[in-house]
Length: 390
Ligand code: KIV
Ligand code: ZN
Image (tube, rainbow, N blue to C red; front, side, top):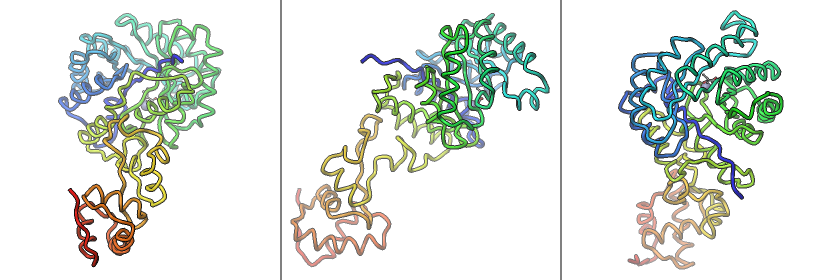
């Protein structure tokens, strides 16, 4: 079955970099941009050029460097922002301006002290102006997650008429439920005149831990772009995690959706971003966490040793992790101990294993994790003579 392509719009260097204390220097940004291009992201949001001279220069240098991806610069619906972004993107092979404005009643009233009609006018003007510089213009309706669908459809229709090529529907505050976000995309697909002329895009924040689920609900309901970051980093609780949405589509062929991402580079890219930003990846993080392919309970270890697929839905090699690990703890069983003992050079008979296992449990109750080097000490502590093989 041929699959529909979902464009991956990476915003690690823009929304991701908004994490407090994670500012990257120009060189670090370039290294990450090069890696994202190799990873196969379709669009790379390089920064918000008007926000600072540093961001402007990064967008310029990234535009020169990137070979394959579209390079995108963020703006507000403000002429000067758009001019500065266009200038920063001059060297990009495929430039995109990402402009927009808040559309929820809360943003209209409190941020802009304005009204719906005036907001639509500003949205149209921003897209038209951006179109005078580049062909590819993405419009974001900030806080679309809390914007009433009828008004949102009106905004979308107006900006498509003005030339927008992509419609970003951000759940800026991470408020939506997956069903609700999916229904929003479906509503726009069915009610916006001219919607076929633009790509609908998901941009979900993780305040309730639903960013990934919401993005998937979005593409199931017709969106064809997901905005995401490596390790899900970003404002507050973060953005949609790139590695999660990519692997969900790959592991569920029934969705009929796929991306251009080379998944074998996911783990190393995650490590690279974590090290450069100084943000640890939580050990139980899906796909790229240290424990994502580690098994420590006896029942699971026994299953994985017999056949990896009993407790693993992803082959670690597919995301660039060398192998699953069998971690020895006090919860481990004989199968895991025999397995690791063999790796370090001991082929234990059933009788020997019983004796060594009793010694192992005493040791494991004291130490949280039993390492390969500890296995020699455990075996020496027993009164049975066990020859090392190899
Ligand atoms: O979350 C959001 O609404 C954004 C926009 C600026 C695209 O990041
Ligand atoms: Zn955002």
